[in-house]
Image (cartoon, rainbow, N blue to C red; front, side, top):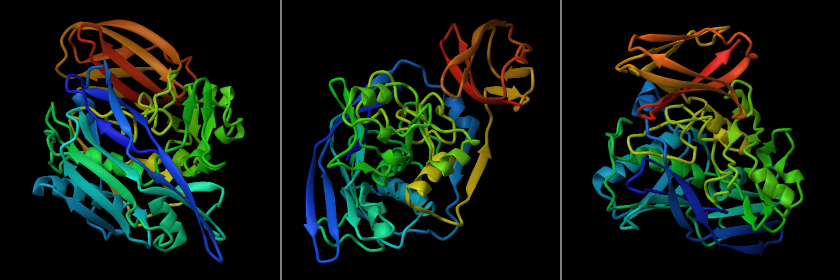
Length: 430
């Protein structure tokens, strides 16, 4: 139902998406099947600045990328319009990554335009339509499917409608992107491969129908939710679709900061913990609900590609285990030869042991004497530990008072109170 678009404000590093959208609906009837389609129109999108400074060292701490040496498991046909050779090569690299992740017997068609856009716009992508059909065993007629996934489940091109392409994209030809394929953009430049990879993820189906109208939340269109919506639950594991629609109860849930995916394969990819959905107290259309939580999966985390923010100097060429697992449960086949290359590079922060039992050592490189604010948050975002430490410039500090913390996964933030630079580390207590 939505088109997700990356935009940029030049004076900030991170931004969040806002989107307005319009849709149209039609039915097509045949003797055997009842075909339905939602066509997607252009949205209006705006980025909002993130005041947090961007820590490029966290991107360099652990970089994972999809191995492209095996044969692809799906075929894409891209119509490139006005692309430069280097922009086309970077776009094609993102396409090649997805072709080594998802399986489909049907050609996936993309229209890609490289043209002048608003100066604060990086680019955009959307499913060309959402579709459903009755009488096909692999498709739930009570759910909407993005065009490419619908065709994969149907096993053929959706010839019942005129528009043949599955994903529409536009990217700003006047923007100073980094077009390298190595995932190492310099500070001040946005990584084009990462932006395209993220947008194609939305085009392939990482998008829900949630919206608000005043103090009411709503999801369904023509009494149907999207296949994405089918896997969203609250903190009590209650399906978002079980709430009245539209309703104030649904609004409260969409702005609760307590939404998760119950996709079993996504949970398996997240150490058997429900991955958290981005659902801040202020609903941001196009950013809320259709992304993983930025705090739980920060920049540098291998699952950070489908979070709502992207910064200059940031790169991720791997959708991550939880996104790939979610795609599998939505109906995508996953390439049996998929493999992830892991590259370790130097980091400014080292935490050990991890997992830990009752204490942790934190080592720093190239950090002068300063005061550090250390906080621990549980998987739901609740702070369970806070301590300020004076760092004397030696290599390590020690946290010896963590024995009373329950077993589980936590996120430790270390903030330099002088510069406000913040590091985030995922730690495990056992």
